[in-house]
Image 1 (cartoon, rainbow over the protein chains, first blue to last red):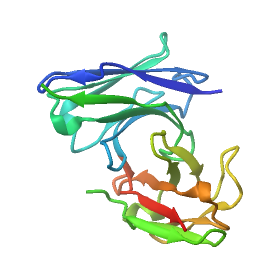
Image 2: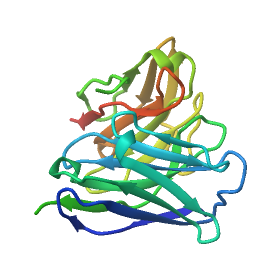
Image 3: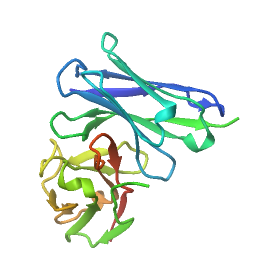
Image 4: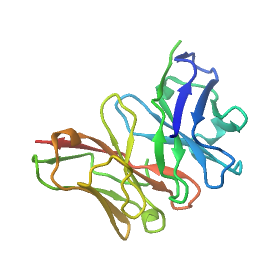
Amino acid sequence: QITLKESGPTLVKPTQTLTLTCTFSGLSLTTSGVGVGWIRQPPGKALEWLALIYWDDDKRYSPSLKSRLTITKDTSKNHVVLTMTNMDPVDTATYYCAHRLPTYDDTFDIWGQGTMVTVSS
Amino acid sequence: SSELTQDPAVSVALGQTVRITCQGDSLSSYYVGWYQQKPGQAPVLVIYGKNNRPSGIPDRFSGSRSGNTASLTITGAQAEDEADYYCNSRDSSGNHVVFGGGTKLTVL
């Protein structure tokens, strides 16, 4: 059974860097085809994909946010970390990590519960 | 702006059939995933691949694709199906993930 859980600060100040950790179990990021992605959702708005890291360390980023994002994995600790620099109030959102379903392009079959991040001074 | 276009809102009478669509140039090349999201909850995958349902998803949910349009059909909609529905796939370059803007389904 695959589970994922996001953790990180609930409140960050404008211009600060956000660091979120996705801790997972039941999957191995060394297995071919496996990936973990980050998706966010501002209050009352749609889902927005942020980043995705694959088992082979290939990394993909949202073109509109690429300059601010870094995704890394630590297979020994079973976690994926997302950093987002220069946070702004418009980045206030629930941030989800999710497991990429192998062989079905970038469909996400298992999601974490999400973590709400507020950007405010 | 999203490369996948969904109608913002759709309604269906209880027990009737409803189709939710997702349009995008990339959809003829890549698989589509459909997600159901209820208020305060994380999205749940309901359809993936050509027309596959994860374990626990009722068989009233089905998926199809014609050209650049993917559809999620709920046959015999139930009150508990009232939710937001999102599609996702890859963009036209194949290098990035995209989500549609979501469709709010109301069951009357």
